[in-house]
Image 1 (cartoon, rainbow, N blue to C red):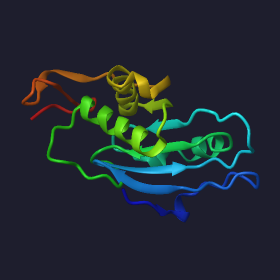
Image 2 (image 1 turned 90 degrees about the vertical axis):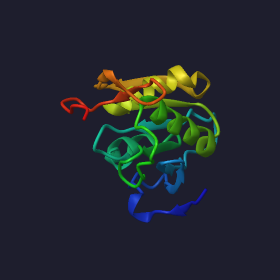
Image 3 (image 1 turned 90 degrees about the horizontal axis):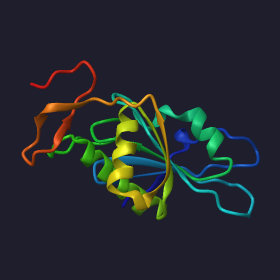
Image 4 (image 1 turned 120 degrees about the vertical axis):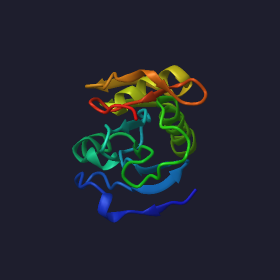
Amino acid sequence: MHSSHLDTAAPSVGPSATPDPLTGRTGPNAWRLYRTAAPDGPQRPPVLLLHGVTDSGECWPGTVRHLVRSRDVLTLDARGHGGSELPDEPFTLAALADDAARAVRDVLGRPAVVVGHSMGGLTAQELALRHPDLVLGLVLEDPAWGVSDTEHDEGGRPLFLAPGIEAA
C-alpha cells in the first residue's frame, strides 16, 4: 500500500489540530486519512465518509475540518470516481461495500462510524449488512435507494444504477 503526504488536501482546522492526510489505494479505492491531533484521552471512533455518484472523497472539506478535531477521518474515492480506477469487474453495491470494508480494515484497523451521501448512503447500508463488525453506526444523508430490479451481473447480483440512468 502506497502512502504519501498530500499538503493540498489538508484542511485548515486551527492551531490545536494539525491533520496528517495520507493517500493510497486499497483495491480500486483511492483514500485519504486525516489524523486527529486531539489531546490524549479516550479515543473517539473514526469516521468513514462515503460520497455520492459523480463526486469524490474531496467533497467533504467542512465535515473533515470539523470531525478531525476529535477523531480520525477516512474519505474514499469510490471505484471510477476521483482518483480511483474503474476495474473490469461489475459496478455493484456489494463491490462498493467490499471496497469500503477493505479500506476500513487496512487503513483504520478498527470499526468506524460510517456517513454516506446519496450513492455513499447505499454503500454505507450495504457495508453494514455485509460487514457489521466494521460499522459502529450509520448516518445516511439523502441515500439514493435505486438499484435495478432487472439488470444483474453474471453472478445474479443487482447492478447499481444512478437515478435517471437506464441500463444499456
